[in-house]
Image 1: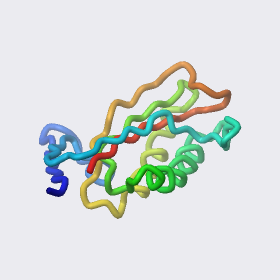
Image 2: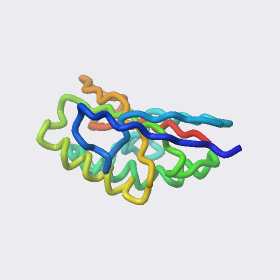
Image 3: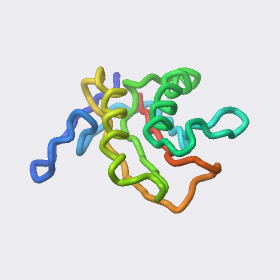
Length: 138
């Protein structure tokens, strides 16, 4: 049987449906894949676009389809995204970051649920401002 996703709105919350679903029920899950700690770094750990959280987000999202494909998944299989920003990311940049994520998810009829947005002191690599975790199911 194929995976069934049912989304649930949160009537007391704002409409973020272009970006995420407030709640989601998954039925007939045969596989779960978690891609953690995806940052805007190259294979040597050099951060791309230091100081620019929006560009780092765009860079990560450009890598995700290929990364997921290597594990047998695609963007449509993403059911949850966790967000981690450093304190260096100005709160005023959040809307621009989420606009990039919404653009990335624009073609998806069922948006993943949004995980927790964490703001931390630092991430693993110097100049890394953002990091994303993708949960996929099928």
